Image 1 (cartoon, rainbow, N blue to C red):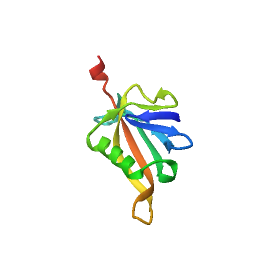
Image 2: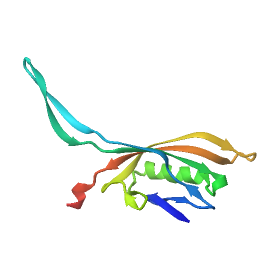
Image 3: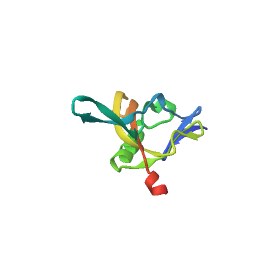
Image 4: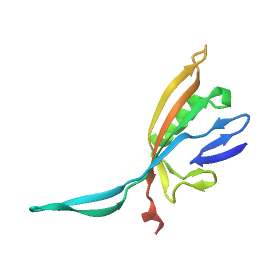
Amino acid sequence: MAQVGYMGDVVFVASEKELRTPANLTRSSSARWTDHNLHLRKPIGEFAGADLEQIQFKINLSAMHGINPEDEIKTLRQMMDNGEVFPLVLGGAPLSENYWRIESLSVDNTYYDGKGELIFAELSVSLKEYDDSRKRR
């Protein structure tokens, strides 16, 4: 089994028996600025620091690739509902020195078998950086 990375206890793998990898990953970051209004002059901008980064990706959960979509969705929903923070590692390297949290999950393109069991789902995951640097000092 080739481990691609992990998100807390969720391991991203690519092998003949099992496939669970992020796809269409986008990462965004921004700066925080505050504009101070001055009388009869243009506002003065003040840099307030970097904002928290965000990551979005999709995971195709398919029974044909050794994955139980219901179990995977339940695991990720519990991580989100419990407010878990976790490291995010891809390709052997963390994507940040900080941890991440699940902001939202969306399940699309679901397919069920003849017994009504979920056999495929496309899961959209949105993560937000969790800055715990105050704890590390």
